[in-house]
Image (tube, one colour):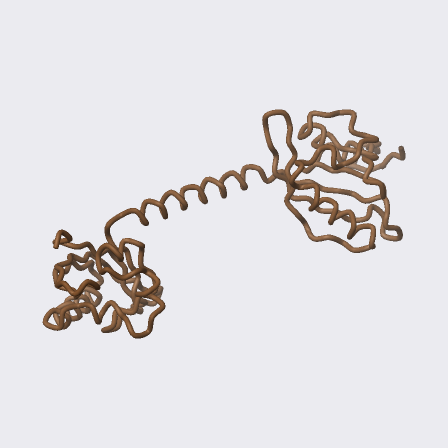
Length: 257
């Protein structure tokens, strides 16, 4: 292998192996031929896979079985002379699993092969995303099971709903889909006419003061009965202070009717 000669100021010229440069990188680097055979792997690749004898082995041997189709698509694009977009692949290593972002490009500008593969270990990022997704699913499940109506609405007299939780069925007798997507039905129309003005005035006063609000009023349930509800909410504001809407929770005071 050829040597690189660098001049470090007043020091004597130092001879550096190109392999030492690759081994100093945090990313795993492979060089492969058109048959996907590994010609060279750097130190980080050996650490990720636990295999120091990868040369001569096909890349797919190290990939998760469910990612093989994605890998073959990358190979097909390379063989057609195209530069594939980065993809996420998994490397099973014993009882562990590493997520890597794979980037591929020709090693030399004037020929398609060999190709260099750079794999950046993104396992910590993926695990954080998975934990957030799991927490979100748990929270969504919790909200769906609560016999209360969480909402976000526009600040108009119809209280046009942009979001309502599934608990709205318990409170109003109407599904979330009915309250959001049906133009003829609005939450404001469910509020008892004698209470609608009071609800509007108290919310506007709280918004003006940028305070939370607590309301007690009556609504018309889908079954034709009159229900008393309690609502606690607050305004949603832009950075400039403009009122974007209101959000909060509504629950029935006398659900046993």
